[in-house]
Image (cartoon, rainbow, N blue to C red; front, top):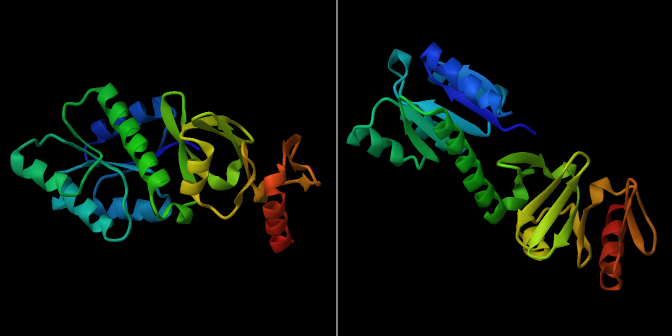
Length: 238
């Protein structure tokens, strides 16, 4: 899944430049909003992963006030982009705990680094959050960026020393952290341990026998110590 960014910027030249910078990195711009009402309407239609917000907007709108209002219902990683770097403006913005604060004129690379860091930190928050079982996705690193992956698309996880490998239909991902800790932190009921080296998504199981779980053409061993647990789960959902 592409990382989705909502741009809240009233200057058409700046917003178009930001859009091109983001899209060149394989990310998606959900919309360009010129004011608070357009931003809120866009959020209701297509939820982004990151907000890139100018502070001084047209019609007297204020980007910090927009973020404060959004925080009352749903929190987003926010990157402020503004020509104002005075102490009062900076302090107001910092109270909303943004992922980053960039001043104009900006460097293209700084924008991308800010977005990547925002995803990096958000990924860590999601995987370590005590409410992680309530989320339906996780951010996994692919090359130099993090990709949003639906938990339902993950077929199984495999232990790889102090790392965990994630397998989907399209890709493989690697996350720092051993399999036991990773599966506990995700905590989703669809994922069950079948072996010291494997955790499977029961929603993607295509077959099972006394020794193996089958996911498409892949067969994963069920160890003796987990057979009873696997049987209990399968009896419960059958």
